[in-house]
Image (cartoon, rainbow, N blue to C red; front, side, top):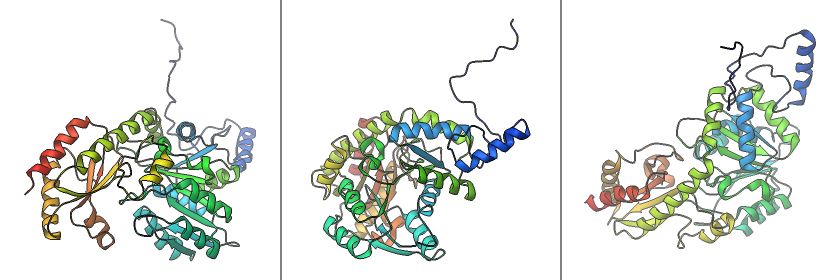
Length: 392
């Protein structure tokens, strides 16, 4: 048998190194000099908190999916939000910051507890008029505040308000704002905000990009080189680096992203239509249904490629007490097949009751958010239908 034959791997080896071997003093000098350029995939890797080959490989895959010039991974979606917001914060130019009200609860807590209470930033909220955001009211707000930064989500959680993202970006940029879009619910499969002029697009990779409920990660992507450098510097200084093992597993899961999300959307559309016709359901919120308040926005923005994989529905009842009882019964009946899990975007369907999580903001005791997975559609409909037919 021949000796010293190296195996030819088809995947990037996992680099768990804390520090990388720099061979000699001239190499080390060159590596640290080049570090000031903050290259995402540098000639020489120095330290695990700075950069890692597995993380760089996963970032390149996300760049291809997103169609971006760069992507920077972090260890959670909220870490990516911290990076995206922090790189626009300047002591000499604080400015006003405008956030849409219907965004991820963790982001809202970060805004209140970190940006406002700890950093003293001038933050403003933009609220919808009923079930839809007004573009005219948005422009009037921009004209008055002249915000430095605007952040919104394409599809809100849990009421699934979908806005005309292209138009909102265009108006925000006209007034000189930097635009950040959290596109976790829509994903690049349905819409790519960077193509419409957004400065940064965010994702909780934990959700659909990874898609198996086994990796916690976040990513921000953009096209501007200066923003990439700022993001890499901030990630290094605060330690928001994703682990090499998670990055390697993410590379495998990203390969099936398009296939998975197409199936997510297909299943959700089938289930939404089923729920809309059931007598035990009073309301179904899903942007793909023509009676949804923002269906036209979703059709325009997503070009009928799909409407996401989240359905929010309200159980029928004569009063809140009966709705609460039916909600408890429904969850108990399906919990073995569709568990109660406080996340979304998994390959398996999961659900969450609205009122216990959102409290007074959405006091609807019969309302449930369903994250639709990629299981067999007939099986999902059978499980849900049997449960609905069994509740008193």
